[in-house]
Length: 324
Image (cartoon, rainbow, N blue to C red; front, side, top):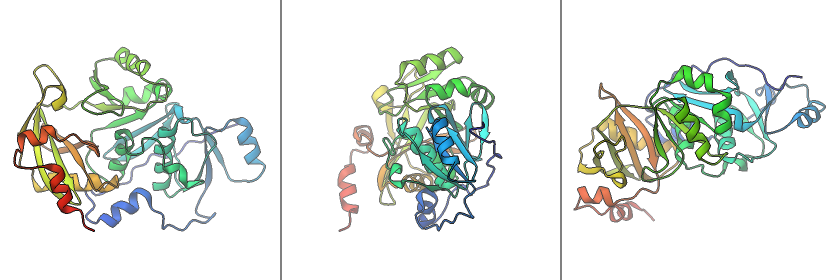
């Protein structure tokens, strides 16, 4: 009995920045697409065992693919989003998605969003309102799918790291940045080898989605604060000595920064693809100065920003832009 089949690599080419917000939102969670059985080619079952597979097979002749969400790995980069299961690339496009149990809520939600973006239909669409849907791990595939520039990033739970280590090793080189959803630079670590990676995975909760990201050597990053499509301002954050983190809470220093029009546009689109009206977008640069979105902060602290921009009160600016 086969519980899953292999697919083809996702190699769709996308523009780096979509210009219209309506396109962005349709890309993220389109609810206007009409589905027919002819368009959808298979059923994807998350967290259903052999009994679920056997029972569903009695009711359809469509192919059924069953996966344990904790064993999946999500790879996002400028080529798009690809999903791996036990070191093998799988194709989840054009499918009905059925979740038997959502015990791995965030990873399930990330996979369901991906299926929907790939012309799929979610059975019980309310499952898209999942735990940590606004978290930093969940943001990465959205940014990638929209064609926004990001570092190569893998997402997996502890079991997914063990089941897909060949992919991790083939796609990324040490050192790597490891993190789980958090704030102020907490739960972030620079990983130098496989032992560091496995130790980090053991140190977090078993169902935490771990972000494994290529390390971009740097001495600073940029945070742009955007509200309702308008740039409130930006700061340059220089990390403390001997620290790879630029967070103000970790000893970094904030300085006024004048962002380029490209950086402002990228930040605006990063908020749009995450359906956020207000937030802070962290951008880092490669050695050739090309910008990359590291993360989007929807509940950012403002003290560091206001220590540099002493004439700006962030929430006063937000209030000015709120329209009744």
